[in-house]
Amino acid sequence: MIRVLVDKFHSMEEKVKKIMNYGFLFSFIVCMISIGLLIAYELNSNIELYYVGLSVFRLSLFFAVEFLICALAIDTIKKQIC
Image (cartoon, rainbow, N blue to C red):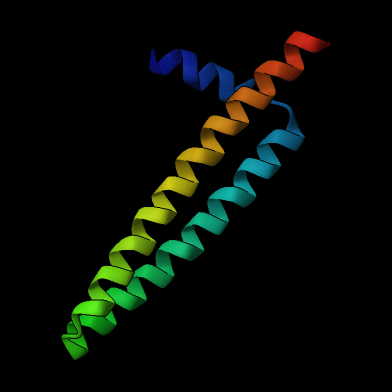
């Protein structure tokens, strides 16, 4: 199963890989913001910062998975059309 995914990544078009990499970079930046909010929670003990930081962290994980799935889907559709 993992080998199939690795083969699909290696056979992806360069444009799709580039968009996926930018998506992962965006997701990483959002994750760093959430870590900053969670560190601020540790310093201030404000419970609202905890919930906001946790929500932003979940959002960053959601973005990363979404970019991965969409890149695989777009690449598969493009290969079937052409």
